[in-house]
Length: 336
Image 1 (cartoon, rainbow, N blue to C red):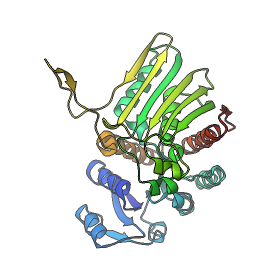
Image 2 (cartoon, helix red, strand yellow; image 1 turned 90 degrees about the horizontal axis):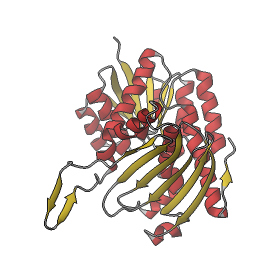
Image 3 (cartoon, rainbow, N blue to C red; image 1 turned 90 degrees about the vertical axis):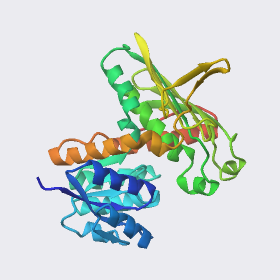
Image 4 (spheres, rainbow, N blue to C red; image 1 turned 60 degrees about the vertical axis):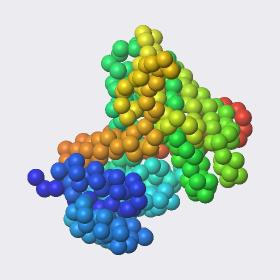
């Protein structure tokens, strides 16, 4: 069977993660070219060591290559929409890191172009492919906890980002919490209808100077009648805290943090267990591989992608409503 030829735009951390996922885990796909506007000898050597035969600083080298079947867009957020449009117009299947854009109208326009082109489009919400969160979802779908009443998501980073990054990222809701908004939709199987936010700057005053927050409690009402909460912090001193619970009419199901080992030491000093894994690549590496596998499977079998255009749009709409609630101090109904 002919391999799916891939071009990757963006040779930063996540672009390299996806390149290695394909190279080492997906025999039916091959990265032909890696593009980065800051292409240099170090990246070229890194790519060559992984069998990537071509590098460039010009994305047009991907769009104009008739051998390329799919494009992975892993560049900066402000380029996602434009590269998605160009890939669609060139007839290439698309995997795009979140978000497509920070402007909802621009996302809508971009998705229209994608739909018209007929190519596959998958958005990079990798946590849907995590073993813990998938098990939560599958358990709820199997009816083991009855009708869903509440969703609780805890998402706390091990350390805050550089304040300069905060300014360019779109803020906490579009950079960090956007994953939790997607997870709320995924676990509930429903849309968020109303949102209320309490936020504060408790971790780093410099983040506040950039006009953002670093700590939040978010409550949500879902279209199916369930309610939910998200609690966020930019710094959990004990590590990367990623937990969730679905509570229903017949019981509840929850996921704990992944740890380096499952040992628990019990002695006269106390009962001691491992801290959560510290870095997001440690915690979610398997999910990055799995989302790539399912993207290429959808191309190969011509089936729907597991996380498509509507999933790219909705979390940004929720994030926009969250920001309105934070500023107004009032609940906000979300207009889709």
